[in-house]
Image 1 (cartoon, rainbow, N blue to C red):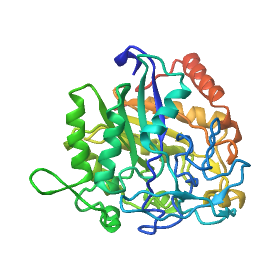
Image 2 (image 1 turned 90 degrees about the vertical axis):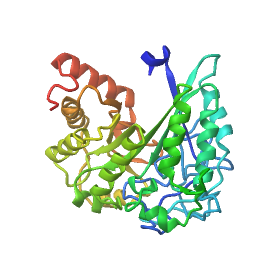
Image 3 (image 1 turned 90 degrees about the horizontal axis):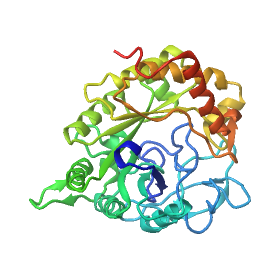
Image 4 (image 1 turned 60 degrees about the horizontal axis):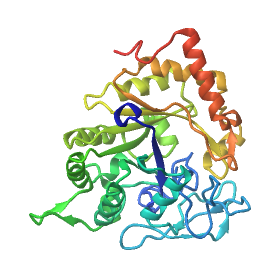
Length: 374
């Protein structure tokens, strides 16, 4: 990004007030087994009316740090508004909340203000929380445009699921959601992916981009069933081909350290992602975090699995990097769960130390991305 734009580009996470088919009852109500009450949006701009406060990275918690059970109702646009109503029990429901979100423009302004915005600074708006293509297509197009129209924004990154792009044959969740369809100029119903393709083409003329981030996590179906991912590997393959056909770059999110997976299993997932004919633009390698209030936490506390040590994780990440071709952009090599709900591994709370140790080890051992890529 710095090479392309000649300066550092900042990413601002926003919450579009959407939900997920794994939470609203379409596919399930408890979410993926590792997912916090914030729907992976724990670092989004603070919501209105309470949950996250300025200067805190808190989702699904009050100012005093208590975690709450979340339930959702969606309005006609497919969005939700937030109410905190019940203290979250250790093995309690993980369905999402009625979230009262700030409008996207105000969230962007707040996020930019944290970087002491100066003339010429550039930003990427990251639609992070929950499933950001799971809603009324007209509403989705409006908020994406709202972000892209901001002069200092160079692009948007949209986190979603492969089964929520409006692709015929695999978008069961979208069909069940009974969302309204946008009609294009010819009068035909327009799907989410066609809207994305149209916007990508339109804004590319002004040098702006749209990225889609897909949460694959693993290629192994047994693990996918355990984590309650809710879609088959074939759905991912169909989705990435559809994205390629619409000239939309995509990033795949992979979790390292999932229960029951060996090092070979995890490396196989990375090789699988990088070996697709519709090659990803980028990849995210995410350490498995155990967060309080998730079903995963219950399994961890019951002794069902152990988390990776820092040394194990760093060695694993380097091995992953060595099999990732150099032309695939590395968007993440770790991650830091919200400290107030992080149960394990606690060493991951010091992200800077993890990154410094990783870089130092690679330098000393002269190991590089793509060394063993095919």
